[in-house]
Image 1 (cartoon, rainbow, N blue to C red):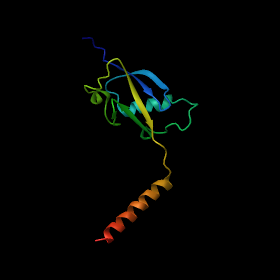
Image 2: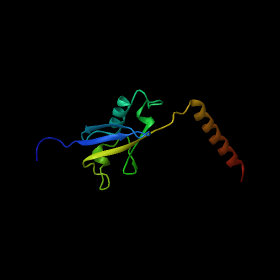
Image 3: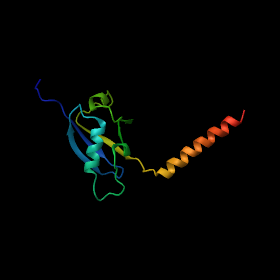
Image 4: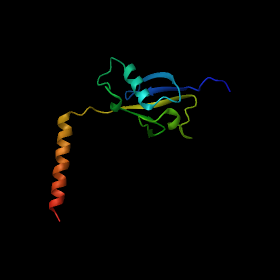
Length: 118
């Protein structure tokens, strides 16, 4: 066995069917690192690109990958990263603070209404 660490070759499939990559990543790379790479390489001609890692979801083998997990931790019998792996990228629609405030107010109202009925 050589001293060279294995690298995973990954390309990222965007919602419109275009790809970013492929690029090679060491097994110790976190999902957040992959998302930062996607943001840095996001095509400039595409509208509504992600701003932060929280604006993105990465899906591989039907599983949403968590930001704090490394590639080696995400590896499974279904998802072994052998050869080139394609991960699907989902961009979360930006929410305004007004929408968040409305949802919080509705939850509070629902809670009050639920307590009054007994």
